[in-house]
Length: 180
Image (cartoon, rainbow, N blue to C red):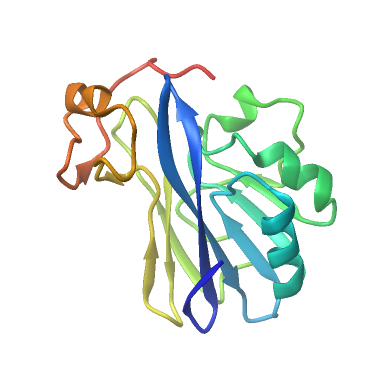
């Protein structure tokens, strides 16, 4: 876990996406009530769980778009007290998970003192909740902005096809590509 401010930590992991191994990142935010919010959960290894438990109590887990959910079930199982929040479209894809709410342009009560948010619109592939942590002035974004290079992915041909190879840009408009 890397501390990037007094109240924000990050940790990297890798996920498989259409045969490509892609770097992904989770943010952990200490809220003003001292509880933790997980933004874009990564695989819950024993090392990550140990680090999270040392930081404090997880109150909220946020899947900011409908494809950042591969590890979500592990957090549901290991942190039953945490409220799980989903981007639009995810509850329909993961009906076995009980979601406390679906994200929109208004922050949830649990984090409204610390975070502003906006839901991206206009991409047929997905909407994403972008968070702005007010105390640290940190913007949290998942796939709304992408920059794929050799250190973040093993399959550059895929990202060349999507137009996000080695240059930061918004996520591609690729409807109905990912059903997992």
